Length: 627
Image (cartoon, rainbow, N blue to C red; front, side, top):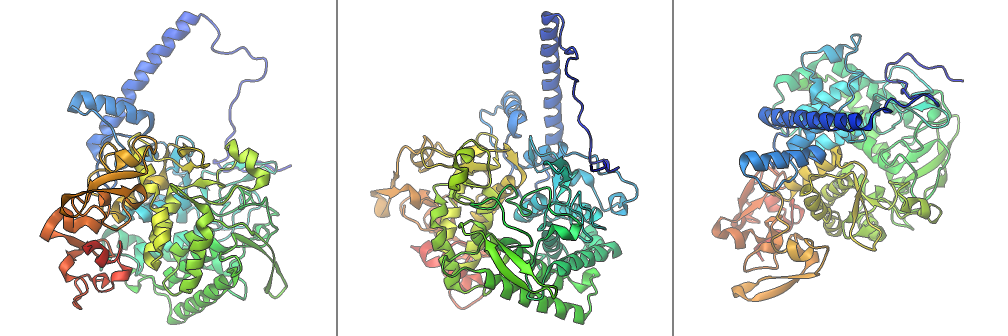
């Protein structure tokens, strides 16, 4: 009973009616020959495409250049490379993989003349990314913004923010979930489910992520001292401020008197959204099927706390002439939102519930009702969006302790699989339960570094080895499944945008230059190169004696192999061993370094002061490095 909208994004699929003769019937020899010819043509085209992409150079900016392209095309490129350049192996090329995600993106919504942002000379639609190869050809705002932030690719981030702003909601629409000021979820959207609802605006966190991205691009979170060039032109454009104000209005409409962000489909004139959950774990709530609306999501509350702060710190020099009264009101709103976030914390269980149902009265006051009791990785991930001091340290340590049931040898699973879902989950029907997502590990790792949570840093950092192994197979999988009975297996897309972002993040965070460590060298060969065949490896200790080191101590920021330093190839902990008197300490901002001998000498060598705050450094205590 729902009329089909005129929007081009909703397209019908073409199928052959039942009973129609198959177009493939006929002479089988002719058919086989045709298939062989077409396959040959496809391979030639694919090879030409790869060579052209290589000639243009990668767009990954600071990302390391490694051979390969990803997926099936990556296999062909490795074959061609071995013939043309003497290469014998292939590994993941981040720049090439991103090009693949760009080239497969569905562009049907790009050329709409009535949207001025898309015809701006500042906008390059070829920079936009699809979410994953081969399944997700649409542009997902959440995936792109978070992924580009982790990759530190501010140029591509600008194009993404401009594209998302161009499709910002203007009215309430019960079919698509559109609301005024709301940033879309998926472009182009699609119709799903028995209600035939659209996915275009079926997300409640994208508007907050949009403002966070704006803060990094046009605000005080931008690492550059001066914002200039095309970025400054974008930030200063009058329509950019209009989009920021609309996003703020959307947030203020959803925040109740206590400062709690409440998700409710009634604001779009609907009783439900196309997706059961409207933040990134959008298939199911942890451990249960549903709770009523309005809902407060703990992770989303943290996102909007950071978003409001980001909006309040947009630089006046870039054209954001917010009045002092407006900035004061945003600071007051942020304080209320922080207080409301704290009110969600369950001190008995030491974690934040993934979702809470709030019954609201006519005055906007909320009263908590049903809530998700199962522990989930949301409590760890939300720390990424918080500042030091937002939560007491003992709360964060409690979260890490309560999350021990989520720990696996490759990182944190999203949540335990509910007993009622276990059979289906085992068949791959639920991918937001019992799975390890690389991008989430990167965010947890960054949060652990910021808040000084050593155990969370070490557990989330375990994903690095799986990323190494996947990269050698030209993959950056969407997620990993680990049931405890064997080696983890990858699932979903073979190239996922924010998994590529996790690869980039860990390369930057671990200070890896060039390529990932080779699995055919120690300690990786003993520990992971042959299906976890050993739990210890051998290296040189002090004075060259042989020592046995447990595999769990690899890249844990502590130098156990004092003779050769091979246990810390991805951290600076053994720099003194590997580089002698030239050993360096890396500042927390990731941009500077200084001599280890200058740490803790009461002279600030790092502009962020991390060389004089040893317990808050980007990697570890310098005392561990020196040992």
